[in-house]
Length: 461
Ligand code: UDX
Image (cartoon, rainbow, N blue to C red; front, side, top):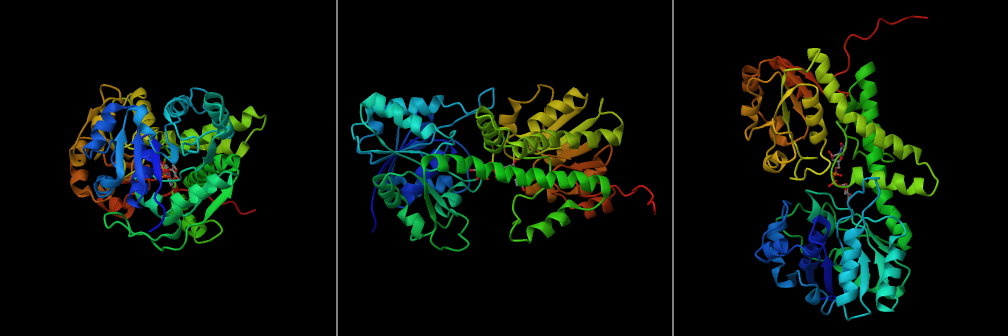
């Protein structure tokens, strides 16, 4: 078999833990270090700190190659590679807070004894951080470190599959020794020569995974650029949807046409109430701020962000148009997480939407299949939380679908129709069967989906 590398991963969040489990599964001796004792204690007994399909099974399967540590003095023993995968949360000004990154570096430089260790940054960091990491290390230890940037592109809900069967890898380093170590570490993934775990979605095809070798700066920028581009695709789809609302047409059909053009590609053209989550909002703002700082105004990105900020309120305006006012109306919000398949509420559009509904005088009932408890702590006190979607709809004036959980499409809408006071549905994700809903008697409005029927009379010039 291939090389076995001793890796320590700092940070047990989405990126850190997923990377650690994936590397352990392909045979490397992997240690996860986190300053959060409770998280580490939980992981030692097989408890994942967040919900991710297949993660608990993978933790079990990779057990023999995995160690969890909160003592910095033991975290770096024998490590050939140390990966930094700590959070880089947004600062109030929209930049990236690198506090956790420097804490990690301090722990590393104080406790690591192998000065040939390769330090890899996996966290999303502003361009230039790699050389600051290098300078920090040099100042603390008196030695020049081996460093690289290997940004992560995994999606929540598909985190392990994305890590084991990526479309590409990025090795940002110009140092040949660092490149050799990275190639050894990722060899099974590059060649796709391991057995795909049965409990994960199976890979579509298993050809060799390309690894792009570039400078640290290119690697750092590539991560922001990829997220900014995907966010731009979404905002573009949303703007076309907004035009559909005005002139007629169905954005789903329009995007199906675009998506079949291989130069455009079908993914990330789903219109709705905009993107949320821990990456797109933060990374688009950080790239805009980074460009501004250098005196460059990234106009396309500013527009992407602005469209996204407005988009979540457009569904509320639609709702208000139905009733004239939302004052005293009972509105049921279906779905709270930022997308389906995750329990994550970070930058979830639902939070802004509910706050706005409340401020316009609506009485809000909210449902979510996985995040109700966590949401309870983040929502205004008088929002009613309901653990049954059907129950949540009883007596409602309108339903507003915010997250595309499959169970909402499968709901018994005939029963809901009988129990609601008014039969209005705003489908913020275009996820429901609008033909069926119209047939049952609902007033249905999606996003760019059912265009205005009464267009102005044509003028023939
Ligand atoms: C994203 C990137 O996809 C991933 O590569 C990066 O590493 C981290 O950020 P994630 O945040 O897990 O991953 O979710 P993703 O599935 O990309 O969705 C992000 C947001 O965009 C969600 O709110 C989703 O609802 C929204 N979205 C996505 C759309 O509104 N329309 C689309 O067509 C696709």
